[in-house]
Amino acid sequence: MADQELGYEALDVLRQIVENSSLAIVAVDLSGTIVLFNRGMERLTGFERIEILGKPLGFLVMDTMDIEGAWNRASSGIVGGEWETKIQVNSGRPLLVSIVWSSLRDVLGRPRGMLGILVDMTERKTLELELRQVTARAEFFNRILCRDIGTYSSKFLDSLDRMLDLGQRWTDRQRQALLVCRRQAGRMKRLIDHVEMMTLVEAGDISPLGALDVGVMASEVAAAVAESYPERVVESDVADAGEPVVVEANVLLQQVLFNVINNAVLHNPDDPAEVLVSFHAADLDEKCGWQIWIEDNGPGIPDELKEQIFNRFSSRRKSGSGVGLSVVRTLVESFGGRVWSEDRIDEDQAGGARIVVHLLRADT
Image (cartoon, rainbow, N blue to C red; front, side, top):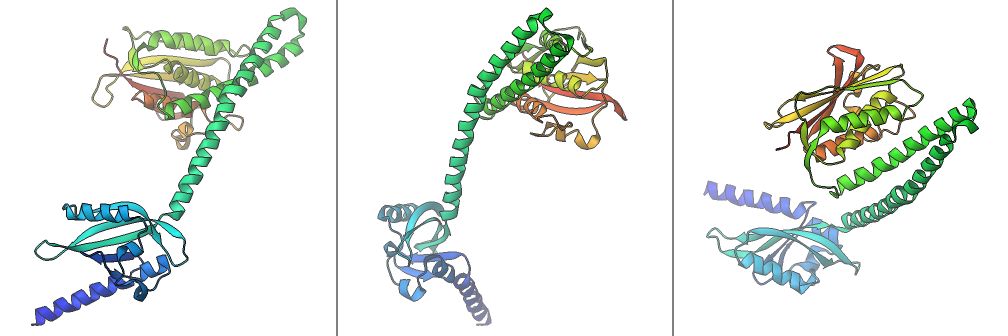
């Protein structure tokens, strides 16, 4: 008898918890009649429980197909689930809700009805709509940036190159001014290209991976970077690995190398700016791989910035865009690889930086 009384007390406590819960909870019996309508439901709908108890579930749920679907799932043995529907509220306006439901069964496992917890979806749907609108606007402006402004930038660069080719028509001062314009215009074009590449990678719209010889590519890129700094002394060297360095990537690996080598020169105030590219066999996720080391003789990277420099819009210089190395990480990870920074000389932070690009070795 004492155990039975304790059982009744426990059930009474559970009933009070459910009825007074801030969660919107409703229960119906096998006939579809509402037998539980707690305080959370009162707040959600504006109805009082005395108005709702004993009424059919169709009084609340406006779409009869939703009701039939729920009953079919419950009667087929499915224990619970979730669906979105509209319910009637006291204000007269339909309210979009998500209903998480479960079957109610007796001790013998026979169905006795359903219990549902309702969540107002209005705010979530509003936020989803706003997100879609913001995304659409961002894509629109991105198309303008990458297509129209990118085209104008290319034409502007071509015009500057033709002006510089005139040679003898310019004084030294005028030529230096043109070189400054050419350098700044080139940076703007690279920024636009980086934004476009990141958009393509994040959308998965990139060319498939294949086998690329990074040794040959690195030599070409290092020479291109040196040529882009005519007023600087840039000494670049690509070490011979003793065998072809073939990795899994696509043509965008060229942009990875350019960004890293260019960054090494850009952040090095000294002349000559020295850059060494070398290759080291190293497993990646228990698979054969290659590490590409790009080392410089610059001021190094502080420990607190070694990870931060790969974040979007993070730059060590006020004039930097903070996109170049972010593009590097995005591209390298799309190849299935990793990238990080470390000191060129162990425990000598000011002795230059080393960027390590770790890629899988391609089957050849």
